[in-house]
Image (cartoon, rainbow, N blue to C red; front, side, top):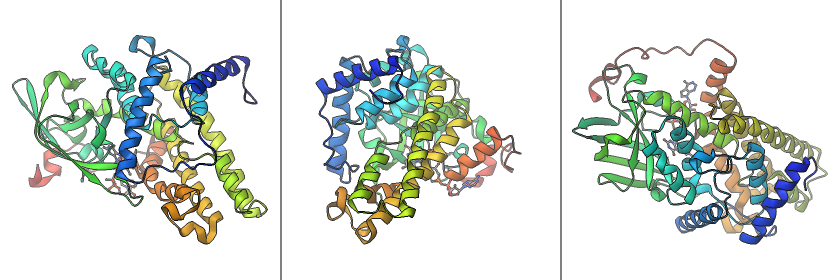
Length: 407
Ligand SMILES: Cc1cc2nc3c(=O)[nH]c(=O)nc-3n(C[C@H](O)[C@H](O)[C@H](O)COP(=O)(O)OP(=O)(O)OC[C@H]3O[C@@H](n4cnc5c(N)ncnc54)[C@H](O)[C@@H]3O)c2cc1C
């Protein structure tokens, strides 16, 4: 049991730990677990995630907090947190399902019809990996500016356009897609939310390689891609509100994912090995990292409670995402500073298998993906603090006019 566990929590932890011991291999604390840094490692990771998800499903541990009506266990957020804590001690991951479980599922539960919710079971079984086709070259922070067009042709929508930064598209069977269906409406009012089969003709996925060496995300080109009308989630032209549900859950997902790549105890153990724990600056950094990790844990409980009750997490998710991004950046910078000159090494040449260099470099991805630090600041200012709205000159104009001849 963990110090601070109530009797119920301790009993649940024991049940989870016992099951995990029987079905998974414990992480070797002396072996480092840096994120995948080659395509082959990434493919192997995706396959391992699917295999593990199937084991979780068979064992009744998939969808811990999902309502029973959607195939989940109907559990409490604290149970999911304890299970995640225990699972992180084992050599397993469900990372490839982040978009499916963390973003698509809550959106379909809230806005999908019965047929669309049929995907939930396949996600839980580990049969469907999903991607998020939202961002475009000219629509990131200003997502409502997106220009991918969908035009109705009989009982199908025909989609043309380009998406970018699509995480995991190369492993996905399905995606959620935002496309413009009414270019004459103001930018937020002409967007529709679709489900798209990634195996459809006309979809081309081109990997983008990051500084870490791996192609985590992709460009996705859509040329005359046909989507059946029943794949529209909610109403035509009313996709912006639904996208909000997805984005809010994305912030909660990223902000609540602390400890996936590293833990503060691992950082402290590394500082000990480098004989740096007597350094007062390092000690302060380690103490602050521990405090931030604890704060994030409790923020996560709050946000996950909202999600499991089917309530939008709201600006609290932005607070947590921003705080998490700052925590990650501070840990990455502290870790390579502790390593000193050795912090400049990379991959196999670096200590701990290059884990801390990966953490350091990934801070930029975390500060941008799911909405940048600045955008989280805007959300917190406007929705949590009630500050005046950011001025927008194109908000009420027909979108087509704002894009000149390109539309
Ligand atoms: C690791 C990673 C994974 C991602 N995965 C996906 C994915 O799976 N699917 C997907 O659709 N997208 C994905 N993205 C894209 C991500 O959502 C966008 O990169 C992000 O929203 C920022 O958009 P942008 O890159 O176009 O930057 P821009 O919007 O062009 O921003 C450039 C800079 O200007 C600042 N800025 C812009 N507008 C404002 C403003 N109003 N106020 C203050 N500052 C502002 C930004 O903070 C930033 O510093 C991913 C990104 C990363 C890094």
